[in-house]
Length: 149
Image (cartoon, rainbow, N blue to C red; front, side, top):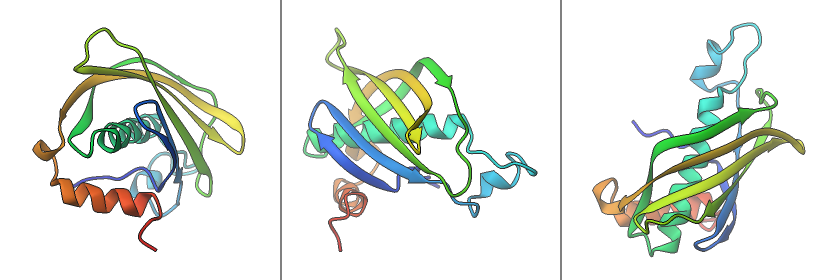
């Protein structure tokens, strides 16, 4: 099963940055037990949403030839909670690396203008086709960009 944790991609600067958002809904299974009396979006899922955005940045910047796979979280700092009903704004920026086969990123999340997380992570590039058919990824991209209306 694949969990898409990004609801919309709002802005892309090829090879540089990407932004989007996730809507936190009470109907998401993980919120039932995290936590029963006060549901909050787990920080690791905010990290995963940013990693997915990094994947979309690499895919869209490479004619859907490459995808990003996380292998190291350098820093994860959480400042505020996201709860059901919140729109979590996400931004990811590529930072320089010495190895062209690797990528590093800085990311942030915000809810209502308040910073929720500051993240730094890195990983490697893999052929997109090793994970998903290129045309399926293009269709998902169009949906996430709101281009299929």
